[in-house]
Image (cartoon, rainbow, N blue to C red; front, side, top):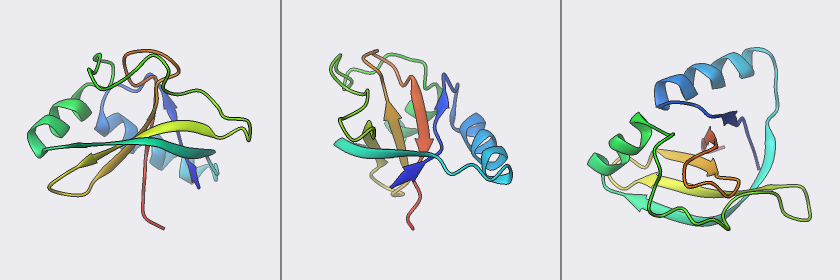
Length: 105
C-alpha cells in the first residue's frame, strides 16, 4: 500500500489540493502500514479534518515513524458515517505531522 503524504498540512481541503498536484506530477507515494484505527462520528471527524495541526487525545508519543521494512506506521482515521479515511504518521508528536488520503483501490 502506498499513499501521498504531506507534512504539516493544515486541513482536508489543502490535503486534497496537494494530493491532486502530486498525482499530476506522477508521484507514487510512500509505503505504509496501519498500526491502529480510530473511528470518529461525523461531527468530530469534521473538526479533526478542519485543523490537522491541533493536538489529538488519541495520538500517543509512540505512534508513527517507520518500521524495519521502511513503511510509515500510520493511524487510519475513519468517519463513522461517511467512511472517509485519512492516514496520519505523527512521528511521535501529538498532532498529525504527516497526513494522506486513503483511497480504496
